[in-house]
Length: 241
Image: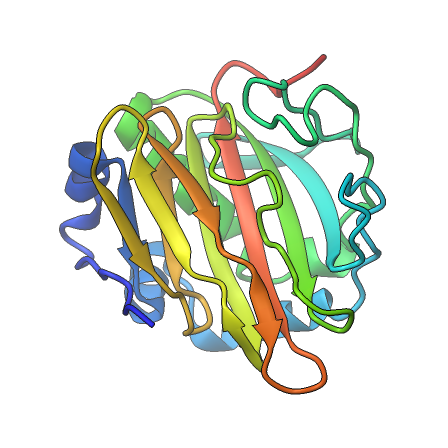
């Protein structure tokens, strides 16, 4: 396992601009977003009741998820009516081009003390990177489970998401091997590979400049899982058919 290339709090925005990606340690993330460990800890319990992803075209039973949408405008965060998740085929050749409805995030999750500072903090990062403006945010809770064998965090392979900023928070990792994060220049030969293992490690991606994927996970015991919170931010509106 390669350790994540953590970047310091006073350098991550410059690295994100220069390289298109940055990895923050849990302590750095908490400091930058103004959240404490005791605020984050209660969120993890909301990954224990995620419905199965009914849209997997490979027939797998390894992915569970919930989904919610918001708009961040300055210091205001507004939840939007529940909507389908949609991506064009250009960005997701496996699951693009269809409206995918997922169960909404539970009200208790978005009411947690850490939720608002996490999303507004990401909006601030997106504005520093792309210019100050409203941000259309999609939040995805994922659990990749190994009860039935190999689990695939990114069955679509290396990809971009068609947004401006992608944030991947590791929430939990239990009794699995694999799950290596890989980030590559979209228009070049350079890349990074590493494994996020500490809860609340954060990977930030400038979606216009890099492609990313996570390798499959295998169980170390009878059952393991990898929980993530994936948040995307897009200028101008949500992706629609």
